[in-house]
Image (tube, rainbow, N blue to C red; front, side):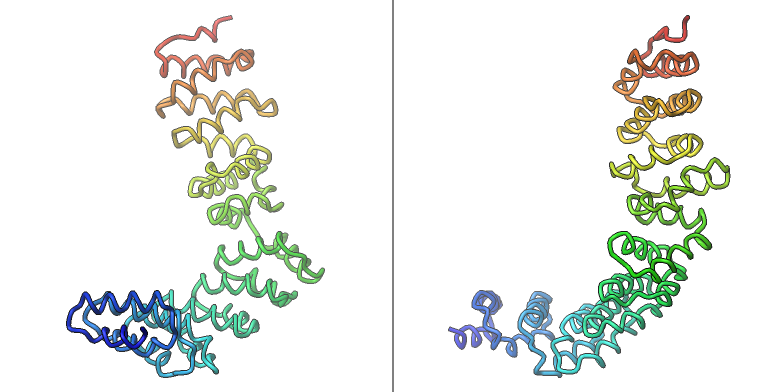
Length: 340
């Protein structure tokens, strides 16, 4: 069966060649691999792709020439394949190290991933990479390997990319660390992490950021500069799409911050959050009134306007007047709520 299909790989009829390829994949015999290698130079891209699939499935690393040819190819997808299969070589470090300097980011990431699987200590070298994605990957590997001590923690938290520092924060919350590493993290946060870092963390991962105590402290700030910087972070994040993030914002944010981050936008998500603010007994009447007024001109839905007519919301004059204005715009009627 195998020999029959292999012979058909050289058939002049392309349909026969394709049929043979499919049959060989169905059979799944790794010994067919050498017969797929010539397809890497085939003018038909379909055969080139099948050759690469065969290499990824069946290459055992014994023929180093295959990995060498892929690693030195002019095509990035072949160098990427080389990075993925390099660990099958008897001595993969040289090939992987070379590919960490590749001109294509995906290749560099795959090569560093291979090196770190080969030797966890390579994670420390990966921290010197110019690629944020590589350094972020190194953070996870360092924590998984138990290689984070006070010195390493200081290096991680000094990284210029918020994505890397956020990866540290996520690992801090998910793992048990020794006191020296945890202490180094806490000292860095207390001494170096400012409101700009909080804003960047919210953009990167709202739920993760909002769980951090130091970010929550900034949420409670009424300082105009803090509010402005945090507003930028919220407006460039997807926090309203995540229920846990919404809950934490409503729990920790100051009135001033809530007003700013709800001022723009339209649709069900923002209206849902606005209703929760308006119904929150811990929020000031003036804040609730401003949240209502900020919906005017933003095409509020009739359902939103009707929800505001609930009896428990109309006891405050300032809020009642604001609701009346919005209802008039949305439903075309005067609610009469502002009348004594």
